[in-house]
Amino acid sequence: MSRKGFFKIEEAFGGSEESAMSAPVPTQPHKDPLLQLVSLQKASGSWRLDEDLAAVLGKTKEEVEKAKPKLVNNEVWASILALIWLHGFKMDAKEEWELLSMKAASWIKAQNAPCQSDCVEAGNKLLGCSVKKEALSL
Image 1 (cartoon, rainbow, N blue to C red):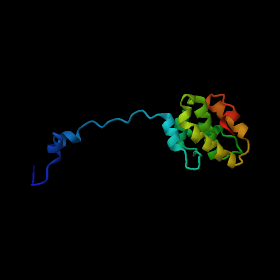
Image 2 (image 1 turned 180 degrees about the horizontal axis):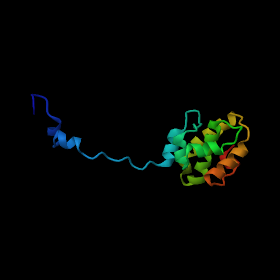
Image 3 (image 1 turned 90 degrees about the vertical axis):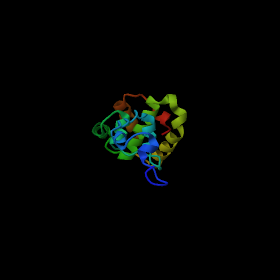
Image 4 (image 1 turned 135 degrees about the vertical axis):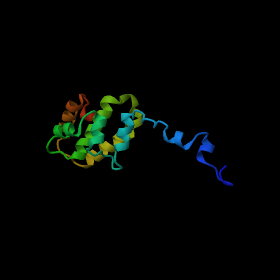
């Protein structure tokens, strides 16, 4: 102990300050896309159209924006894409995301968004899926 009642960090952890500072920084573990998508959902039930969502979908933000039907707003489009992705790629984990899917579908319906069928069709094309609008509860 250095002073009465105090000790140096290296004494507590069995090393020196230098070895602690030169220790390798752990790399981030591979993030689960489902958990990323869940964390991106807003309290309202919608998703924002941004780079993070596009990355989960395996696309760039530009690709996602380019495929969006003209008459629909970005949040409705992003939310429909999230639902298509869940139904198209994560059916094995449906129990984990079913409630958030229902919340998103309720939010989309409340927006009275035009061309929901067009959005589902365009979203399926973009993501390489064949999810029916009825499966999304829209």
